[in-house]
Each structure stands twice: as C-alpha cells, then as structure tokens.
Image 1: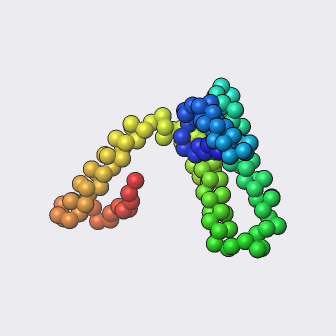
Image 2: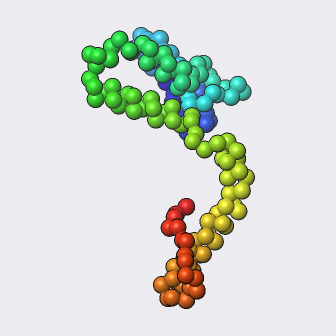
Image 3: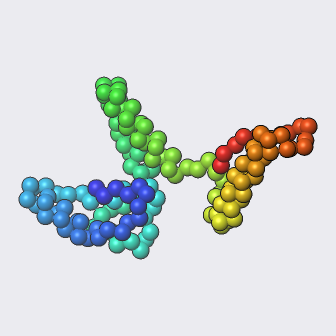
Length: 146
C-alpha cells in the first residue's frame, strides 16, 4: 500500500510495483497494490498497477466491516483508530469558505503587508499609551494577534 496524505503522486509506482511483486513471489503471496490518497488521483497519473482508493471510501468500508468487532476490541486501539479517521476526514473539510481561501491565496502579499503594518501600528499605539502622549479620553484598542 502506498499512502499519500499531503504529497502528490510523484514516485515511480511502476518500479515500486515491480519490487513488491518480486518480494511477494519469494514468499509465495499475491500482492494487492493500493494507492491510498486523501483526494482523487488525477486520471493522467501513471499508477503502475496500483489501484487508487481515497480514504473516504476506505473508511466507509472499514468502519462497516469492523462494527460488529468493536465491543470486543481493545478500547485504546479503537480510540487511536477513530482519532486517525477523524484526523484524515478533517483534512477534506474546511471551516473557511472557498471565497475567503481564494481571496487569501490571491492577495497573500497584500495581506502580509497589512499584517506587518498592523504590527507597527499596535507597537506605536502601545508606545503612545505608555508615554501618555495619546490625546484621547476613550481608547478602544483590542489586543489581538494574526
């Protein structure tokens, strides 16, 4: 099984498949070549005999198959498994709307400059407040970090 979570499929799967097949023949077994990924593999990717499988499909099958076995399983191992499943599933979800992610991607340089300027502004305001040179009777200045 070749596992890809964050990395793209860049390794020579054909060469890897040849290696796995040779090892399997030596021990008298028949290998099952699976490429397990978070996202679907691009149709142009050369899989070298590997069968693509996304985690979502794998987990659906796995959780359905192990359901009856859970009452007798080691609870610590079940906890680890469920934590792993949730972690991988959360990689596919995002709390941030697509429009916001695209805006940040398209404006990252301007946003970095804004963040730098806000840091300078906060330091300047802190300095004025400490020195007593700020001339306002009411200051609304939230402390926040970016």
